[in-house]
Length: 102
Image (tube, rainbow, N blue to C red):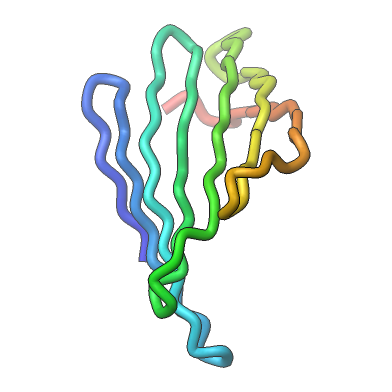
């Protein structure tokens, strides 16, 4: 189950997952912002059935809108585990192509 709320460039996301095979319940709670193409977010991860903190992801990016139908978004993700140790930084580029201008 996923839900989100956004107001004036600030968003709040919540997700709840249930693995039926392992009877495992997980949740994610995050917040982020978007301002003039620059965005960032922080998402915490929880193990609900054990009531334990699993870690956190911090992300940042910039959306460069080249035209109404084409944009490029370089981004980075920095994960932390439950002991606040930093994981591998992941960098990427997302390309968005819209075939409809509606």
